[in-house]
Length: 308
Ligand code: DON
Image 1 (spheres, rainbow, N blue to C red):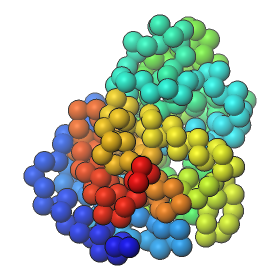
Image 2 (image 1 turned 135 degrees about the vertical axis):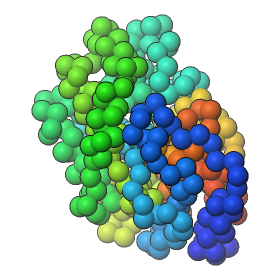
Image 3 (image 1 turned 90 degrees about the horizontal axis):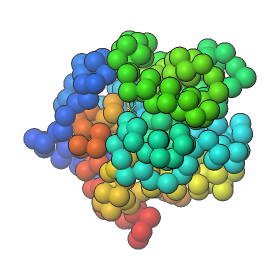
Image 4 (image 1 turned 120 degrees about the vertical axis):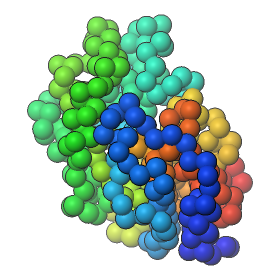
């Protein structure tokens, strides 16, 4: 078995030298301020060993990666009833697309496209005030990452709240079909804020460990979700985690993964490791360009693709 520390450091060196970095997201103005040359990677194996390199301690905006954790919370709250509000099929469309919603009566294709994630946030919000729902999400992230210092970047949340016209449209459109229960601005407020949670690669890799180990944190033995639920969340990450780039990600990397427009990707090597990478430049589908290449290289050198 190749030495994980060595492989992770090699990958960080190789990524640092590449001229192709993709384009930093600018539609959320605050995200445009990030350093396009940043690169971080952290891998945590089953024994809790951390292999990390580059900017692995620098916090970045996790954006859509938060949707893995809100999906986990919503499934914990309402179980399989969630699937009457949101589907679990790949959309083949961009993350902020509205077209399928009309044909499919306001039911979003899956929990990771923006419409689906907004519907999931609405499920978490029901019965609570927005502040409580957000507190629950943040506490869950802190618990999973075992780090009470994780916070929300309020400037990023405010920036998206000011400019999130597409999400506002998506939420109103779903509301017209009765898919959103709460006031649209409450649901969106929670959504924008959980997308603005800031974490480092090391914290994110920690938070993802339960998905790599049948629903448990292997260091503490504590169960977060049932193994069947972990398996299913991984399945949705594999099929839907990269929007209309999900097929390409499965083809090249071969691991369940979830991207965010902040340039992060959380990837899961089942039974082996939880992995977080961060490189802010994105490809055409809004997924981290170098992040995907780094994961492809890691999966290949470690022999971790789930497809053998
Ligand atoms: O709703 C949005 O557009 C952002 N808060 C999150 C989008 C995102 O991260 C898409 N990922 N690649």
